[in-house]
Image (cartoon, rainbow, N blue to C red; front, side):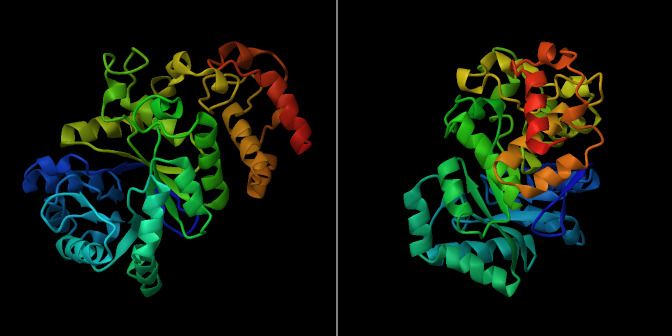
Length: 364
């Protein structure tokens, strides 16, 4: 397993996490088996916005004696008091649900307390007016909540909450379908979404990725808008290449599916290559580097994807991006203009010209 550091803390988060959307369909014994299998595999980040209340007592038993090995993403607004999932912005109900979740998880603290599933400005207004946001912030001040996060599908809403300077993590839906305007949760243009990822990295807000496979649609040629199935490795790599992303949360229903997700760790660069998505790239995205590294290896040894990423972040005002760029062993000034990258780029980026532009920008 590989890990990425949370900027607003010291936590090292596994690049593959685990969601709980369908795991609750399994009996308790199977849920416990999955959680412990995940821990043994090095997964340490778990989202608990599950579709079933049964996951909480099962997680509590699975984490007994191992609580410090897991970081739990708990949602303020996901209501399980009735025994099934519900959504609420009522403060009294939220408090009861959080108490119930903590009791069943057999813990007295929350690693990541999330503002749950806000997609509309009216949701945020209600969340604030009812005192739920203040409740989360009070729990953080008390040490019950270590970090505050937001779960949303909407870039505009995410930016509004980022403006409050309270977030440490953003749970956002990232996959090539959504980024290129396909699917029910494809909210915001490709440009808006990419700017959001860049802003998160600039401000040190980590991203935990939900819906990386779009409920399996991307893995099925008959359902995918690409008319060709992507693999789990391709989808995971696509998400991990986005600025700000720390962990990708699949929602396996059993150990077999979890093993398939974990197979990403042993996949080759060729198996992770997702350049097939270029067949769906809209006009507005043609000519923009998505850091897929399909142009690699560079004959001159340049990390073209990383150079482009640092350039894009620097344009957004990230001063650290410039520092990172200047410490690279090979920079844009080392480009030999061989044309290898231009010929290989599935997104039709003129990388030779791009390297010259980047060289002039950074002066190196």
